[in-house]
Amino acid sequence: MSRSREPAHEKAYRELKDRILTMKLRPGDTIAEASLADELGVSRTPVRDAINRLEQEGLIQSEKRRKRVYILTIHEVQEIFDLKIAIEARVARLAAERGRDAHKREMQDILERMHQFSQNEFNRLNHDHALIQEWLVIDRSFHHLLFSMAQNRRAEQMVDNLNIQWHRLQLGILAMEGRLRQNVEEHVAIGDAVAAGEAEKAESLMIDHFEKLHHTIRSIMEVFHFPD
Image (cartoon, rainbow, N blue to C red; front, top):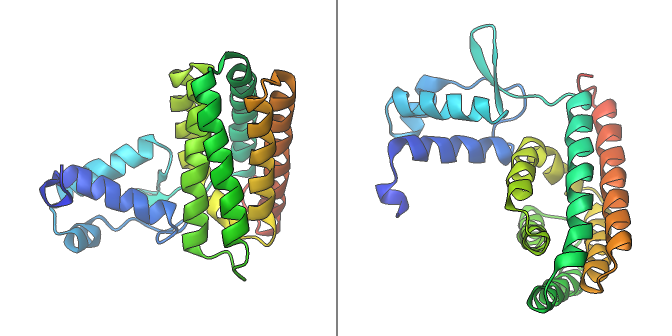
């Protein structure tokens, strides 16, 4: 379906979600239902439906009869990464064990894309938005393949939901000096282990990746006085 024929409630949901995930609406910002409806050229009903849907997904919260962009707490990020480690480390192990030859060839293709990305893009002085988005496309392909190799779509659905909740923090982390390069290197190491069928190593590397990432996020949240 083209964007021009998109139902009003889907348009409102997509636009509002995009504004939250790209930080056009920041944590704590009030969602002004009437002005948002005017901006999008829709009635308030689809906007209200979009707000309710995003509240169920954990991106919006009700506070004193107002709707605000949700502010993650340090403890909630801990919960998210506890779950990501438990699920995705196991998925990395299963991917190495269950991956077929066709999967492994696809993994090699993705790893080559990662190498090309690191060689062609890291000469940029700043980690601009376009560069980060390029990496996120490769990153999504990588993780989607791991779930396919592990033969567990339900786990992928659960992790997708978790990732939505911390996506804004992810963008901030990737913009940090050196973090994008480190992220690429860690993914390449995991992918190499999976492609080689080294299940224990793949699982261990995934745990190490998420523990480092969580430590970095927690440190930043503490500096900026996020709620506990």
